[in-house]
Image (cartoon, rainbow, N blue to C red; front, side, top):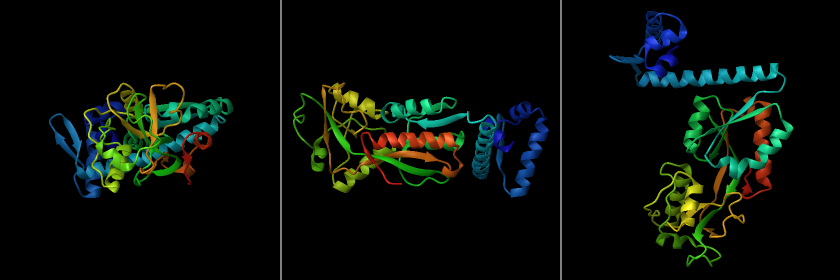
Length: 297
């Protein structure tokens, strides 16, 4: 009830939803406040908002309920004999680059299990969706540890410079790290894990962060803008990137930049359903035979 109050911002709305009186909801919140010894919500003219202490309790309670919801889904799937769903948070282009073959194989072997993809705009959003919505898996760019989430690497992606075929750099076999300092590149998303990884690599090389008057929300758009001649693009060497469908582009390796690691994030591996385990393993197996180097667990 407390989590519902925090999310709705209204005692009366929760009372209507639960079929009780507003007074009962208010008394429940007050009992919690007496028990913990601090105020949990701030009452305003148009509803309530959680205090700092209330947000701490809301997050903890929501985590517990998400785990309970996940367990109930698992029991339901067992009762129905192996059906159910695998719910995955991904970036906008993840399925095309990393999962296409795996989805086909998984569907062939698990025809009764549905795959539900929730599209997010960053690894951070995938983490949040995993925590808040009871999803099974999230495909992420691996970063620093996140409380309550387990990360498992699947592939390492070297960085490449995308240039037009008529660019003066197009005939090169590789780009040296120091040469990046003079290039105006298409900017990756400001708060993305891949941008942070790239900026850190630039600092390690002792070169200034790239300058750009064009920024994008995903790697595919950066590559498209490079193809249109709006700048060079420093991007991971994505699976399928070097196919015959891009005759106007060249992708030049940048060995000085450490590779970007991508893979899975889950709340708990040992709590995953057999179907979710199978899908995660299927994707990893296909990546082992495709572009990128499989990373050790």
